Length: 237
Image 1 (spheres, rainbow, N blue to C red):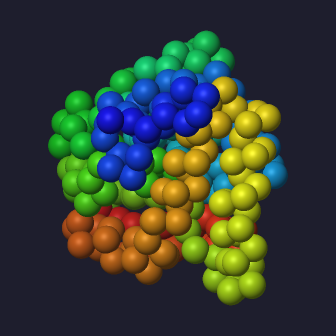
Image 2 (image 1 turned 45 degrees about the vertical axis):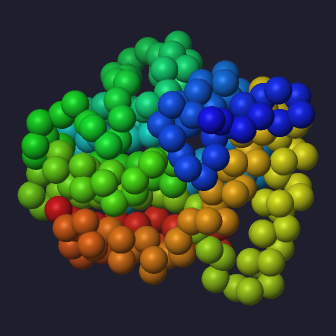
Image 3 (image 1 turned 135 degrees about the vertical axis):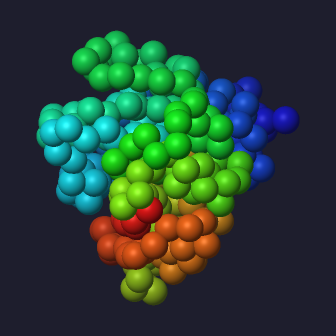
């Protein structure tokens, strides 16, 4: 069962059951973009830009954006001229996205059971969503299935700061400051307790790279953003 805080607001646990994760994001959908901007101190905009650069979208390509939420990551891909399908497990996030970005194509789907044919996409990208699936390797294998041979995978995810003093400071921010700030900007602050826990339990840069390679992706590389708070992994099918 999902956990509940003292105010009765539910949140997912590190079991990451799909129904719990979807329900949690449904509840934060309306203020999700604002909360991200505040909690990242505006860095989320720079991270989205780096994702688009790594995907390198161009006219004529079809790109899958998984865990697309309200479409903030999909929009710059579409603006670059590619066709993009914004896909997410949360109906609430997709409804908000459709209201704010009606030109985008939104599809409700599970990363573990994508409703797309083999080798459909020139690139697949997922930003801050791989950490939330029940089975990371199964999701990576499913993404590989729908990607054309030679196509690109781009994963943008929270990671491990490379400088120890900064790592300690960041860990303190996750545990102490982030939940407090979330009470001011989010409709479900308890969800951001899960965010902190899931980041701390997530593998570091090399750990994720090894997992991606294990799932039949090749030429895996990564780039640290914001001192390693976020890592951008890129691979080929």
